[in-house]
Image 1: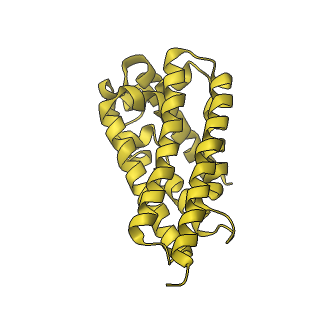
Image 2 (image 1 turned 90 degrees about the horizontal axis):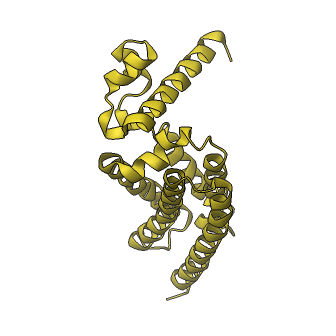
Length: 211
């Protein structure tokens, strides 16, 4: 990585950290993009150059997250269900947030999306788009499955993802032991994803049967 790219990454991380501190102190809804700029000692436009919208400050690289989930489902092995393909992503998210500083994490997405109505709406809009991307991938890998059924299955998977995020956020805000919460979430996520896998296999078997 060149010096220019490294400096851009450092600035991006600095702005995200400053924003998280402000969100922790004041709450997401009370902080403007200009507040982040002032606290970071940069021009307003600099913040917008890295984060075009305010929700991007807490749900950074949402497009990358959506693409990762889409590709995981699209490129999975034929004997792997969508839930199994997404399992690594779900458990990785649990471990990522469990390892965060508990105080600093109060200003990050899981916690702030619990307390902010506007950010909550953004989170649900993102999950809707994510479900659409996963459903489209299922449509390519399992063309016998009707689009409505694929969408319903994809929505169930994103519901699990959001439920995990909500549990992490609630644990951060309540001061609960994040490591213990993560252990419980790993077990619960396994149960939910296994159930989704069983359902998907049953569904695909039904629609692949000769008429």
